[in-house]
Image (cartoon, helix red, strand yellow):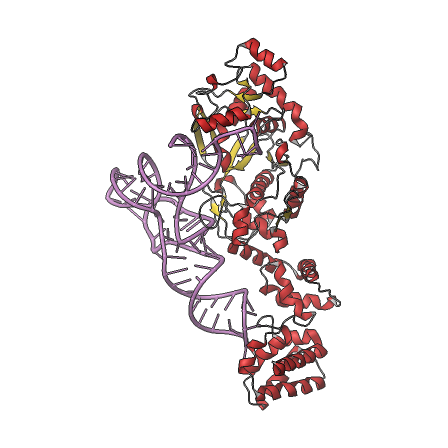
Length: 506
RNA sequence: GGAGCGUUGGUCAAGGGGUUAAGACGCCUCCCUUUCACGGAGGAAUCACGGGUUCGAUUCCCGUACGCUCUACCA
């Protein structure tokens, strides 16, 4: 029987969760679920200097928002706990020691400062087969000297001893056969002076211990893949190594580089899944969620960045993505992020949401503007009317606030130039007529208005726009008489009166 | 500098030895709508370059160019 598929997403809790990160989780998740496997979330917090308070909780909340639930994690538990690498520290040392004993790794006593100096002195300096003979390590020092240094608790790191001129290759699920010459790769640190493993050792050990069968990560990891392959060979056997998939990068919309938070700030779109405030700098960054994106739209948009099912379908639920996702349709090349397209996905999802589903979001959007809803019975109708005009959830506030309160500003400059006594008289009479109107319904109001216009010998078109502006404040929104019906007789008349006053005062 | 990876309209992309080279976003025009949207109909715009192989290459092969990633006791 085939081994059960197990994948993992392994973020470092160092800050907000980036678009690229979410897409990596998503592909992991889709692949696992498509194949009936498990999705594990592992926290890679081996760099204590970069630990950020709250970042771990933030990651969990992002996943929850996206509808991606891990099968095993710090929060969900599981047979391979702990799922936080800092809590697995002792484990890694054991493997590092084994590598040293078997001659695949060695102790190095050079300090970070000494190496910095080297790097400054020698262009393109690398700690490698070519340079290690001139450095302070257990390969160059006499054995008793090494032992002495170790006894004296001299700080050391353990480095992998990269073989000289060996072909290291593997098959990537996306790229096919990939190969490197080992001479070109430096002797990466495996275990740091503080006893923590580096990423290189930790991934291999944990992927093995957690029985990971398929390992997804960003393309930026490709150059260090030979280190991981070699580690697998030395420690657990190549036949047990997971299949690798190096995902294409998400690129900035202009230029060609990797998309960064800075690009979002610069171009005016979010890059993180949710709001994030850095606790050290207090720097605030808005996320997709708070910008007004539906999780379904966010996920959908991300899935289509580097993958498609070969048909021209573009809108998929998470469930559909799970059903249709296969690796052979993942692209090799990076994809530029396009915010307009992202908004389009959101608009499509808003259209697909029912009024009932939308309601809590609309209430929240209005509440944010300080608008409370005394009469919820109208809300359904309002949402129906306004839905098509919203691409972000936050658009619901400006698109519907005038149903609940006077327009904050009335754009009389749009009325004024074409205003004359005839219109003034028309609206004055309109007020009187409306006051006597017995049935306050869309169709009746429409009919009444047009009859009056005819009587005054003014084209209705010339009067509709002023009326609209009186009621909503600007040139937007659903049909005027729909609005009038909903806000009611009293409000309609009051808003007309107010604007008339504004015009005569201006 | 080195290594690896990549390259179909402005963007996401389908396709793949012979096609009018799909579709979507964006842009433009028109229709619908006496607002703004939604919707509908059109339009402009693409196979990085050079060699092969072939009757025929955007597609296969080889180069070149360009871009990106990595080159930390960060992930």
